[in-house]
Every structure is written in C-alpha cells, then in structure tokens.
Length: 383
Ligand SMILES: Cc1cc2nc3c(=O)[nH]c(=O)nc-3n(C[C@H](O)[C@H](O)[C@H](O)COP(=O)(O)OP(=O)(O)OC[C@H]3O[C@@H](n4cnc5c(N)ncnc54)[C@H](O)[C@@H]3O)c2cc1C
Image (cartoon, protein in one colour):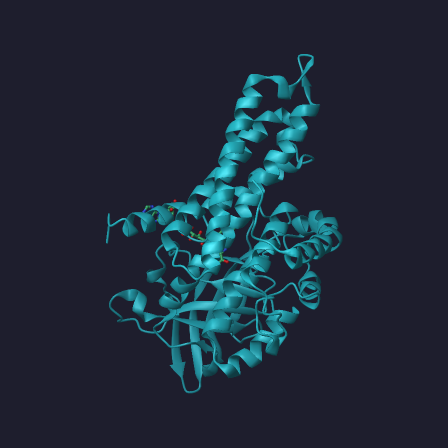
C-alpha cells in the first residue's frame, strides 16, 4: 500500500541519510561487529552531519525537525541492518528525556554536545535483580553537600562502553510508598569519579552494539546533575515510553519488510528438484502469510505515527504495536530463514545475522508480556 505520510523534504532527507549509512556505516559494519562496538568517530560524524536529535531547538544546534525525521532514520538504520548503531536510543529515547526535563542551565551544558556528536547517550535503568519491575531499583543516590553520591550496579546498558553521558535511575527515598515514588533521574558524565564501566557483554545478536555492566562506587556528581525533581523519576520515564516503543515498532516493521524482499529474491533464483523454489505451494503460502502480516503491520504503524504526531494518547495502541510487530517480525524471519535451507544458517547470508539481531525486540524496551499487561490494564482487566 502506498504510504502517504512523507513530503518532498522528507524524501530528500531519507536519501541523504541513506547515502550516509551506505558510505560510513555499511562498509565498517563487519568490523564493528568483531570489535563489539561502533567506532566512536562515527557518532561524531553523525552529529556533524545533522543526524543527531534533529528535533532539538535551533538554539542548541538542532533543526526543530518533526517526528517523521526520527521515523525515517529508524527505518533507514533498520533497512540497512546496521542496527547495532543505537541511533534511536540517543535520538528518540535518552535525548528527549534530557531535553524535556532539564532546566535551561542543564540544556546549555548538554544539548549542544548531544546534537553535535561530542556526547553519546545511554540510559541505565536495569540492574542484575531488577528488569521489568523498575520500581524495585536498588541503586541509591544520597545528597552530600553540593554533590549526589551514587552507589549501585546496572546491567545490559546499551552504549555503556562508548557513552559520554548516562541517565541513571537511582533511589533517593528508601522509605517512599509506593516504592516508585522514591526514584530520581541523574546525568552522570563518563569521567565522573567512582563511575566504572564493566564488561562489554557477549550477546546473541546486535553485536556491533556495546551492552555493558556499569558500576557506581561512591560516584560523586554535582547536585546540578539531578534531572527534574527528586522522586519524580518513574513518572518522567513513563511519559516518554509512548514514543520510545513506537520507534522500536517502526524499525521492526521495516526489518520484516526487508526479510520478505530478500526471501522473494532468493526463492525465485534457487532451484530444487529442477524447479524454482518459488513455484512450490508451500513457498507461496508461507510468503503469502508473511506478506499479509507485514501489510497489516504497515497500515497500523503508519496510522499510529500520524496519531502520535497529532498528540493523541496511544499507550494502549502503541503497546499493541510493540508486541505484535516485534513478534510478527521474528515470526517472519523464522519462516523465511527456513526457505533458505542450509544457506540461511550461514553467516554469508544476511538473513542469518538478521535472525539473531531481531530476536531481542520482544524483550527490551518493555518485554512483550509487559505490553500485554498494559493493554489488559487499559481494558479494565487488572489494576
Ligand atoms: C540487547 C539489550 C539491550 C538493552 N539495553 C538496555 C539499556 O540501554 N538500558 C536499560 O536500562 N536496560 C536495557 N536492557 C534491559 C532490558 O530492558 C531488560 O532486559 C528487560 O526490561 C527485561 O528485564 P529482565 O531482563 O530483567 O527480565 P525479567 O524482568 O526478569 O523478565 C523475565 C521474563 O518474565 C516476564 N515477566 C516479567 N514481569 C512479568 C509480569 N508481571 N507478568 C508476566 N510476565 C512477566 C518477562 O516478560 C520475561 O519474559 C537491554 C536488554 C538487552 C537484551
């Protein structure tokens, strides 16, 4: 179905960003996978070319671009499958927290660096014992004179090795009832005393994205690095989830479309028992099923993008899109890989990497079970 969301300026931007990825990311991607992280210089290049937080105020170096520019970038990163480059984490998840919650002095300090590529962002919520149940965060922050002192451990933190600024969720009130009212957000600079990066964790997929343990051992940061008000951290996190999950679903949709395109080309070319694989009814039915699901996803996601831009509250619908599209994406890559036979299991074929890379999308940014919990709650089925 034809997409109607984008105008001429968006098309020009898409071409420019796509060329940037083709020249600066694609040729380096295998190396980034081997070293377990994207080159830090690539982030600087992305910033200098205007691809970091283009929605931000011109006052700090942004372009005040609409949300469709974020959609285009998430789509192109997915289409080129350089998804170890955690652009949406910087642009659409952490950047907006800092921009929305920080005061003028903090914005002056951080936003220009975030936009020009001098500061790569990360967000540290998850702890070894705390994942889905964020209210249970154990990392603490205590005010000591004009400094906050942080103690605790985080894990699975994307960009953990390369980040220059990390937004940390910590407990400032151990007695708060309910517990989530005791959480606050802090910005920790990469060179803060007492901040230590642990292992770059070995993963199933997305190997070009560094994922780390982080340690805070009497880590001292200025009092002015508290984001917003103490005790409101949980609410700030919830406020941004709609956009965060929408962007994950946007990327996942494009990945499924890419998989179908690759597989269509392969089954037409590959011959089995003297005939193209595409002529067998099993192949046709499998791909017809995949194409139908992909089409449903496309219509749903484009409608959500438009409604999100119109300022609608879509927490139920976006939770639906996040679970359904990420599950659909993995179903599609699972079915399609089968049609590649043994070649699908070989690294030489991009679908092999895609199978590993796409798996995590039903786990992170709120697991798909948590999405169903949110939907059920909004249906009045649970409290
Ligand atoms: C590659 C990768 C990158 C990540 N990047 C970041 C990052 O940058 N920053 C960050 O803070 N975190 C990050 N995470 C962590 C991620 O957000 C968590 O893994 C996720 O929230 C799930 O938490 P958990 O792993 O502790 O699983 P658990 O919470 O232990 O869940 C285990 C299982 O139980 C299910 N479950 C949990 N609660 C319920 C419930 N109430 N009802 C039914 N089922 C339930 C879950 O859906 C899951 O299937 C990343 C993870 C990965 C794998």
